[in-house]
Image (cartoon, rainbow, N blue to C red):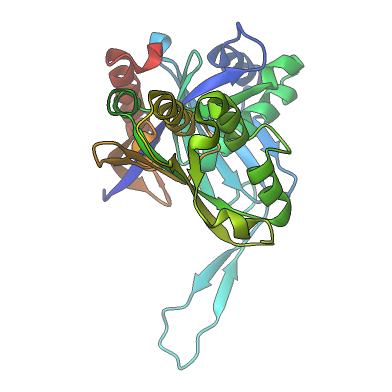
Length: 311
């Protein structure tokens, strides 16, 4: 079989209230439904996510494969008969089947999660699990969680040991968010939290680039905002900027940034995220679930061995 590359990403479950285990709730909800048809969650747009199959790994967790599809949706068919003009044909699914749009997989061990193809911020997995838990009649608190990105320990150690020279955050901006960004109004975003956390040490020593003056009038677009030490080498200012860099690196919402270290190195989101590229067998427009789960299990064991799961 041909091999394809896939990325495994590590996420940690953050609960609204402490003391819960996502693995426990997943095992309970999955076991409540004996068939894949019953483990289907219908989304607001009319598409569905179906819990296809699972694998028990005892102490290493519980693995699942889920499929996205739209009920009774046809697929396009291309004619290979030579012709001056060729139209796209259509083929509907047979009775009792649907065509696969895409799938995603996850391995859940306690509150530690390895995901594959689960979308930005692992939203596909999180939304499916909340729907599944609701369908199984689990209490409301079982849905009150986030699948948060956790910074790579080596990269976070670099920030602590080397120190931060500057932090640049690239943002898509609208008029409302511009006010929030500069004036600190609005929701508890990473930028607002980090600014408040560092305010006592940075104060007037923080220099912000001249693009900020133009952001207030912006209605749309993308702007890179840089924060650095204006002049001098004061310890308080350096400590505050180190803290800001650490906060940005660990925050789930800060997905387009560049942290410049004092030794000239830089750290980007892809480098901070705990992820691993693997090669797996391609099957149809998916991959071998058994091989993918094996790779995920091995990666979870690697993370446990290097202390990532204990942080």
